[in-house]
Length: 100
Image (cartoon, rainbow, N blue to C red; front, side, top):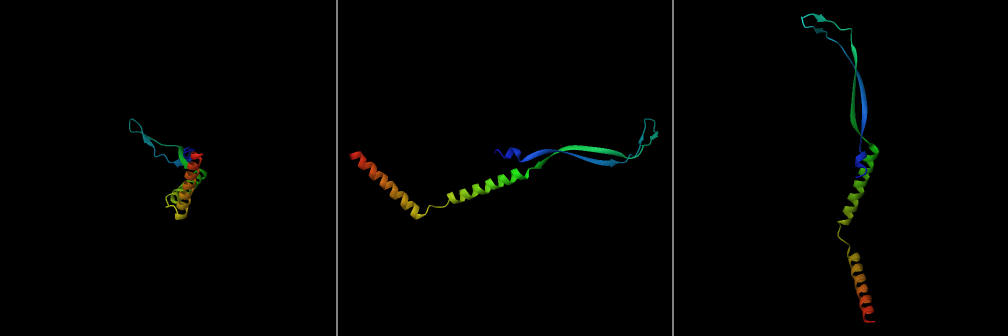
């Protein structure tokens, strides 16, 4: 969640274009000419993906998928037998201490 806020960053972009003037008509129908082309500056802000944060998020997602895949696998019979044996040992020691 900490990385998500830095995933995109606003970057100011400036593009210059040239525009030609077609002239215009005045209120009484007179035609006004222009003095040539004009340089027009377009400024805008765009969100750019931050590659480092994106890579970190992808690594974390991959690691989480691997953990979930291994955790969802059924336990091996040897592990289950060892857990049952350890539980029996703990109960035996606990019962033995209760009698003394």
